[in-house]
Image (cartoon, rainbow, N blue to C red):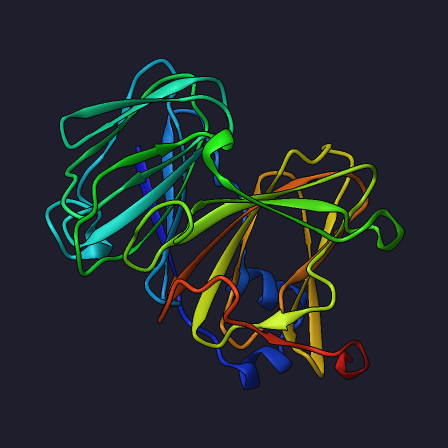
Length: 274
């Protein structure tokens, strides 16, 4: 079963006037992972698609998605797939890939229908592509690793870069995830902006009793969303994005836009936050 929801782009001016429910309707994505279903969210931020696929006793094939306007979803798109479930297979373009938990698979433009195998719990992101690149399965040991932060500032973490220029070539999709160490819970503070790229987050590995406070909005007009385990959020290019959990967690980040330079950011000074 496939369901697709559309998230339209929202401006800074509109966001300033939003209450909690309006913020959640515009940026929060819940209920991504339903047994036996593929649930996609087609966003108007760089036309990124965010989705969850959970095969339950039978494979799920992702092919035509009406919102894309093409016979098959990857006719003019590329895709990144993260498995947060048990080891399972993903097939596309005549190839079958076995994804363990934490593996990321890249599928290039023109790969055709994508078949997701039982046992997996798949998070996917997709963006328009102007070129075709070969499929690539990236294990965590093959990912780029950047260590940042410190225990003293509660942000000791490792950033794992999977679909990233230092690891492989893609059109515009950049994807990876960040893991925290030793009780650290703060991500990306001081905050930053990257006006040339949007970003989507999936928060996972969070105890169901805990919550994450995801901060967004303009630096002088910040807002927050309270997130549960395995929920996602869309971050517009004009918005800050940082977060803090009441317990340990991992989050998958994915970006699309003008370039794939991970360091193309504008830092926001702590004293400028409101």
